[in-house]
Image (cartoon, rainbow, N blue to C red):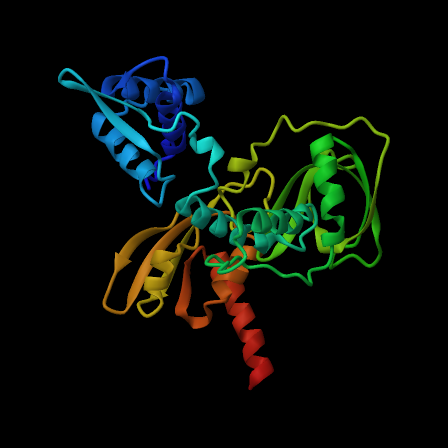
Length: 336
């Protein structure tokens, strides 16, 4: 089956041609019909070629497609195409084998969201699709996502999600890890982000008149607040996290240059999964690789580097190197 994104559009365009007994469709007509359908749908000229249309016809005639009853009729030296059965259309057929396989994979992916608030519909939809298209038999997940069904705070996910969608201001009772007592926060919710298997809410804090980041598992309760919602016109969240690892962004802080010495044994892992998008190789030797990062220094960065233990050594900046030296000294005292 053709895998490019306009394949389905072409199949249905060809189906309309083959079903139309009021006109003869030669190969050039089929090509034009496919291009017009793609243009109407996507607003672009796809430039479908003759070979692509022949491949599409071959697929549609196969068992992996719809086994269409296509006849080729000669008119002089040219050939036109139509269904031998006037009542046939791929719209009237069940899904083909390739579509069934793709649907199985989609259901397997969707099943990973079961149990997550705001995705309660997934389980019902999966049951209906499995029953309608007889997919139950060999349905096996081939993609796994990291998730923590025991995470606190997920009970608030749906209310927060809806508040963002419906532009509702929230009154949140929140107690951070370092707070001795809960605090009341009036927040205009803007964005939900997952990091390290936890969810975080970003929004405009009414008291501090700046953006705040709240961990969902530290929210005690929330209610709607009758305050005019402040829309987000300041932050592009596609770019907001560019200079950091994790979710802790320091307003106005510029990224710092880090030089890290990575042991050769773990370098293949860090090479294939960079610590940050800014990662660059500065120097290589038989034993180490020195890399450069340009990031804000935050808790998540420190935790990530520390997770590699002695496989990574901080060269610059000296302030971060001294911080790790202090941590290492504290650990040493605990285990001697």
